[in-house]
Image (cartoon, rainbow, N blue to C red):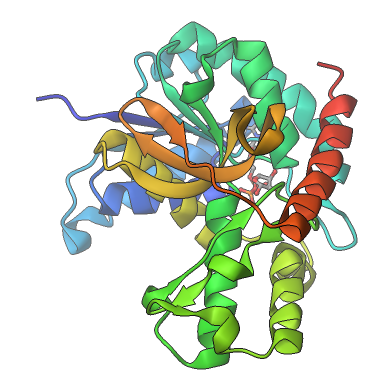
Length: 311
Ligand code: APR
């Protein structure tokens, strides 16, 4: 039986880690694609990962290419093509360069594998996933952005660090855009089922929420050159795995809203059910007034960046 085909567009920091985790989970055969200038780099990474197989025991094949024809019949694409942030930049500063790259990638993906499921990671995320959707003409359930999964993981991490409880027992969701206006829904967060707001004083919780909002920037500052890659890679793999195995996991993702939460025509972080149909459903729930106001605020930020795409 043939293995699912996973193609990674961009073989840099996140791309390399995506390849490693996808192979370790034996999700399918992995092709790492990059521009011709970086062909040697992705071929080298692929070979290195093949040589890790005897230790780890996975049988997935990994290859590198800069030829779009090698990506025919791909089942899942994960796109990280573009440039990452440097200190002092926000995600929106990447728009000009990454927009051109995303348009080119969308056209090529449409040509090679028009029925694939596409996960976008490149920033500014909400505008990049919108660009892919508009240029490719894919159906809305086959295009999704990775943001909420990572933002929620960051929130969970800080809550585990604060309480000393296992991160496994902390549930929470972060909605909205993948920027400083994101909306952690603290009201619904629990630790082992116990409401979070009863365990952490509200002023301390505000500080943790603030750290979550700027968690990506915290790492950019520490690195001095480039942005986070381990956790972003794992977050996208969870989404790919849910699609390939039809797990129907509920993951906060940038999905196209058509009326959900009062949002129309924009990709924004909402709880999404991912199964073999792609984004099969958005789970809607009533927001409190202040949550709605925060979501409206993040929507404005997303609209402004999307407007700059001119699409
Ligand atoms: N097609 C394919 N790959 C491309 C293209 C293109 N048109 N243009 C650039 N790339 C490749 C680069 O050659 C590089 O190898 O994309 C890769 C990006 O890798 P890194 O610079 O290491 O960036 P990374 O940390 O992986 O982040 C990628 O994800 O989280 C976002 O903000 C981040 O937009 C950035 C993206």
